[in-house]
Length: 148
Image (cartoon, rainbow, N blue to C red; front, side, top):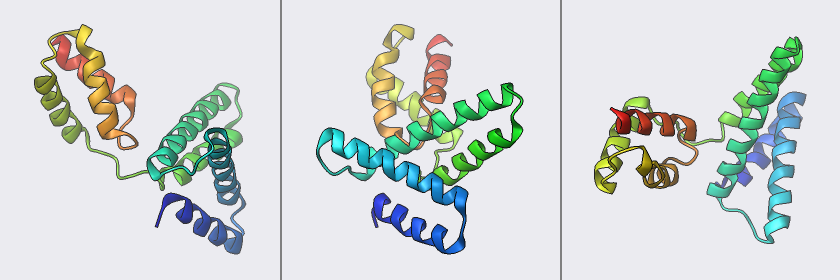
């Protein structure tokens, strides 16, 4: 079952359960997916949908942070709940130990020696861990090993 099919099934379930927050979250995500398909004029694959979900999660986290700063806890809570719904559609997240081990391996494979070679490492790591780890975490671990 593709991610888009899973979203459609979950949309039906949310409708039956009258879960308005989950329903609105899924509808919003489906809208983003449809707009992207129209923009590029082709059907999106699961990996493309995953990148859109990651983008949506980042937006929701930023909004939650801003609502927290603006003293709007009810809206902050809503955004964070949407993030939990969206996280269900991402592949299983990689543990930090696995990530550390693989980044060290990538550094050896690419022959990276200092922070100037960060781009090489990021290119390999981002493509491998797309949707499974945040790029900021990958970057910080890579820099940690390169500057050590």
